[in-house]
Image 1 (spheres, rainbow, N blue to C red):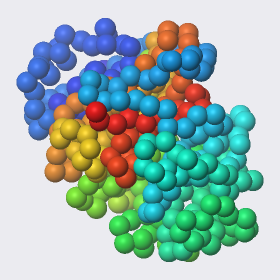
Image 2 (tube, rainbow, N blue to C red):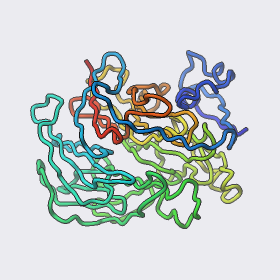
Image 3 (spheres, rainbow, N blue to C red):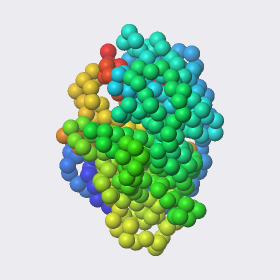
Image 4 (cartoon, rainbow, N blue to C red):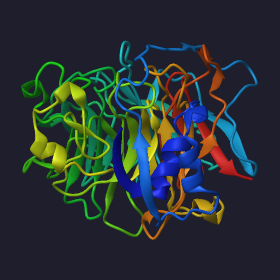
Length: 420
């Protein structure tokens, strides 16, 4: 058995968010955690050995939402349909002026466009809906900065001249960063985020394979978060060994970057936990040689013991195979105080697990820029049965009024969650 040490928070998160596999939690873990455990205490967690269970392919039918059915939020919250009849609305970006941009893109079929939504009268329903930019190449991340509209396509970072309030861009974009295209399953996604003063842009680039199956040379500039200047120059690797980092945000009150990472497959039902983590500049997070700290992947055994030894243990596990992709910190005040400055995580849902995991939005409480409690379910109801789901949440975005938008790419809908 492979062991490492981290906070009780991590142990609770892994045991509680391993999807539908809570029946496999050991009595020892439960006793060690206890109902009154504090996040600053430490103890050990035993991960299952690799291949403890058979690797399975378990993809439920994506059935869509029946009339009158919608996701379920905790008591005290209201869920409404913000926008529907979109085509795989995978990601949302809210511009400084409040305009809402939605990247419609997918793996097998992709609309390859960005749609503008504008809620003019602030009633929670957009009155304006326009195609803002089209003929793209699997867009995801978006950004308004220094008079430009940036788009992260799968093969490059582009920027377009942009004026505040524009409803359509027809000019040809300038490709300022070439990016490696394609990838394993959904690793075509490229997210972007600027720092506080707009002097740097961070680009998330997932791996091209599950575990460097085709050799590490094919993974150049991948499984990384890259840092560039706003004109695309000065590229460097900010952090590496991140198998598929997608969601990125800054912890409120800090200059610490956080990311949500979709971890590797085919080691069994409960390996490897997806996670959210603070990102250390120059840090190495294990992929493909190690997972969740210095636990060597048997498929890369003996190749890089030096990198295995330096692998950073991530901060918060959020369940194995949950496909945790979206990440946003709640920096408003509409929601009750317990949610202030905490993190919402969009879990797209498993395919490599005998029982479904993910298919929900979870919340991780924070205090003083650090995790302060175990992850908990926030938006559920996406699963009808082990064979069928209504939708799949991806991105999570905080609106200017403090409500939360949840992109459901499979359900072709964006849901809005607001406090009563």
